[in-house]
Image 1 (cartoon, rainbow, N blue to C red):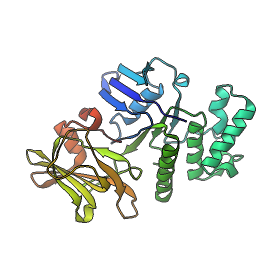
Image 2: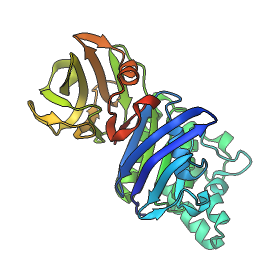
Image 3: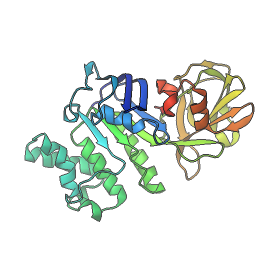
Length: 317
């Protein structure tokens, strides 16, 4: 398996007069893992469904490598997708579910059997292939959905909040599993996540070592270990506005450095608590803590990777 570069140019989607996504420009390198984060309704799933070919964009272009693909049927895009609900066929066994995309492509039966077994063993579900989804655990259902997406060896893998229906321990396990598979096969991966609950900030779950980017231009005033924030970066954006990125495993900027919106700041690490691997993000305005999502929405900042501020989302890769 090997990924391909994905480029979105001026991508927009309207449902009647309602803008689900406005003018998204995004370059994803071949083999890169990119995560979309944001609240419900910000355009994350809409973007994934346009990349997959399930939705047609209202305007803009989608490129896989140098090939423009927004006019292509989903089956012709070489994309694998894992849905939040898993979308497994309840009347089929896990084996039949995983084999389904290969049979649609009329792959020979002996090759189907070999690929399904190989992929299932890779994901640790080879021993439950003869069971139906209702007779396996949530984690095994998730692995089966992931195996179904991987078995056809896609160039692009789309993950639509794939861990939201799992308990905390299984979420942590599957995060590592997704990162392991990405590192092994280098499939270009787009991973959609929603914002977590926050008090003075938001904790954004993502695989350990995932790079993250500045949401707004400014000057780095802190880039070191800072108490409960762990390895942290603080950026002064002027006009009394500061942002903090905490719990990094590695810092890639230094104090006094000017950074641009979309510039890589560091790698996501572990909180050291049961919540696992997170990037902590918070905003202060004139020294007072502000709701990060309200700030992003109200101030129209230049979000990382140019995701429209009006949609309320942000991108961390």
